[in-house]
Image (tube, rainbow over all chains, first blue to last red; front, side, top):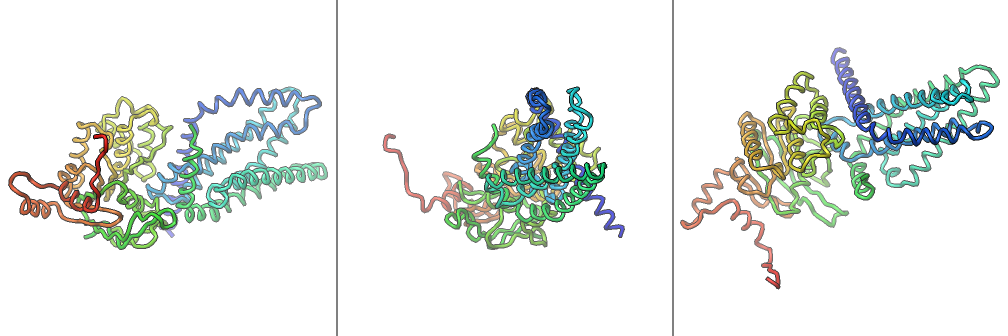
Length: 239
Length: 259
């Protein structure tokens, strides 16, 4: 029992270390993000100015602002140099997957909160708009994270860009349907509890599937994934 | 006692068209300083990448002490240190941050990590550049960072693929002394290099890999005795002669028509 507790503590420490290291690395790349902020602000300003308060404006804004984050996540996950480093250091990829997901989940949640309440910047959008954006953000984050996790470790998906995009848009479509269902419930029950329940369920499934399905897949497929990534990076190496 | 043993290792590329390793048998004893040499494309880097878990053999076994290792087994690699021919580091971290990150990944206590990182930065003459991104470093400096990361956690086996590539003569001499000291303390070292004089001066044992096979293996002291016996009086024979004899037997004579 003592041994098991000690092992669990060591595993948790490793996940936290990788998570904090990734947050640190992302922080080092903030210079690049600063470049995006004026562009995002301009985009938001244009969308929000659309007449009659275009109902999808907050969601479009959310998608646009989250896109770099997901691109970052995707490239972070598949970077062969990094994967090789962890393999060479003898770190079980379960912890790497756990740590990376932890870091990205934290960032996504912060992004969603910023997105939701950032909307208050324009006075003609109400608090309700903000709350709805926040809820939609939360509903779409976890399935998107899960989809990208699968893409990152599954050689069959990784090899075909078409599949990656298809998965991305299918996930978005699925989350929008979920959001609409929750909105209908909100009108019926006049309460946000369905949103909470759906988000909780999503978080639970995301954590469970990532740890028990994606992490073992990463472990099994690592050599294949690295081989494909090497090929991809040879062609698409970012400048 | 063996530290590493490769048994009948086969590795092919391009669906079997290219044979990188063709039945390699090699045993490296604990505490030895082992030099692996061979022409370009002989399979040295493939052998090291198999050991690092970055490639999977088609057939054959690899043992680390008494345990067989596979790409799926991770724990044993925490006792090894690697400098690969294409060093692995995070370009957007500074040298100090990267070495601290490596120390943390190897479970070293924080105080030890900080002390060791400071010492390594001083040892490898990286003090002035320590807080600059690694992507701005020269090739030699990057090589030093890789070496520092490989020895930070006191590995029992140090695997070095062309470690002196791009490193200046003064630093190379200091690193040579460091490696000898580590070997003296019981660390097993496997090194590949095209500089045969370096292998001769550092190693206790060496092997020649040619076309994916071990074609020559000897202890350096035994080789020295053989060379003394076979050498003529005018010119002392060396590892270079053995290397050329073993690897050039089937090479055609080449020349350029305009020279």
